[in-house]
Image (cartoon, rainbow, N blue to C red):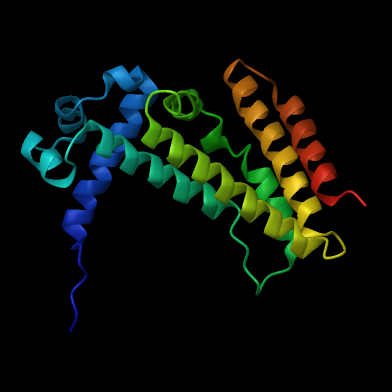
Length: 193
């Protein structure tokens, strides 16, 4: 029997630590994230946070990578399913209730601002954007095989800009009808002849 390099209890502790980082970022911004504050928020010993993460930068990088994986999963293409429903579902997920909470939208705002705080954060943010757009372009290409890759990339970029604008304005109180129209606009961009 082979063992997993990270046992479930260890993984649970790391997940709690990363959850705490994301909660603190959303509530207090980068200045509210310290190794001690994360340990307190996660309900673990400070030594455990230091055991898993060398410093605050590595801790925040790990949290950013976790968000990146969640974002990329939103646009993951399943070749066993029909392309167009997958694309439409991906475009609609952006306005799912869990993404329209003040907590999540505040976190998004903090994540965008982190790109200006440290070059490692900027690199992760750039890679995350590229991977998300690439995944979206794959969905568009699968739905519209008549389009060339460059056009699919352009449409994915345009959709991403609209989606980020939706999140930013939703934080300011944009109504649900406006969000539905924005999703429809994203569908039009992605599926246009």
